[in-house]
Length: 383
Image (cartoon, rainbow, N blue to C red; front, side, top):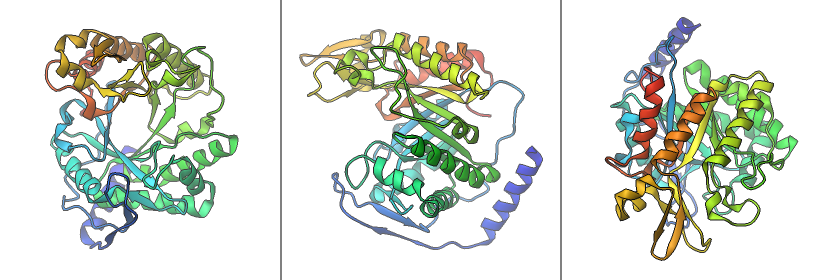
């Protein structure tokens, strides 16, 4: 099967190399940040040659992943590609008719710069579609729901995403539909995942999905308002569990952002769910926050980097008082414990939101997680 995939990839490479693709990026409505969203219609390809990134060989050794989401406005040069298996560029925004919007010229230029930088470290670049907020305002749920609910718009969205992966020489797509809120949503998401898988996997590309934690931070019970169909996970390579943002459960409490006991319950839930549905737990990836939640909800979150810049000793803690406010976060020791928790349950690796929030240097949380994963996997990152 691997030989067939490699032969197919070579055919695709030769076909693309011999062809010329033209297109246009044109702008639409201003965003709140002042950037003009780009509607993708056969966008001009990046200048990177197609034969530079080969399909990786399979290894008999156990391998783990470390995936880092990166927001589209972030300077691609601040990311530590050397320790990430994947960077997930966030976000492409779906339109109800199955189109795609990107956040202005900055986004497409940052994406292309990320591809070039990631290649130097043999790190994969994935494009995330969806997210919580939509570029045109409000939640992304409604336009995403509309796009995948209709067979025609769903097929169009799959085609747009696959074409963008090909043109920009990406390594795959990450689905971030927040969140399927009914059985109908779950069925449509499963259909979307299958259709996208059918297009990406024959090309040697990956497909991942971000999922809600599904556990109430206070009661520890399953949250039923988000619904997934287990067959969805058959079609993806990684299931990225957003095991954070528990602060709103049962009334606001910043301490419930992502404490270790909360994460334990999340890990147990997803491990049991995959066992019950006979799905490989190696697909599960535990997500952790690289930001801090304030006790006062009127105050903005701060990055882990800001906490370390205030005092490097804060790396050893999970709370800090700054400017008269107490913040809750995950320090280095908690990150070590969470990484080993995931490994002990047979998970395939770790995910972080988001790479631009990390501290550079000796107190990097990316390095902490990388080092823990490396202890159990000789084949971390560069397989």
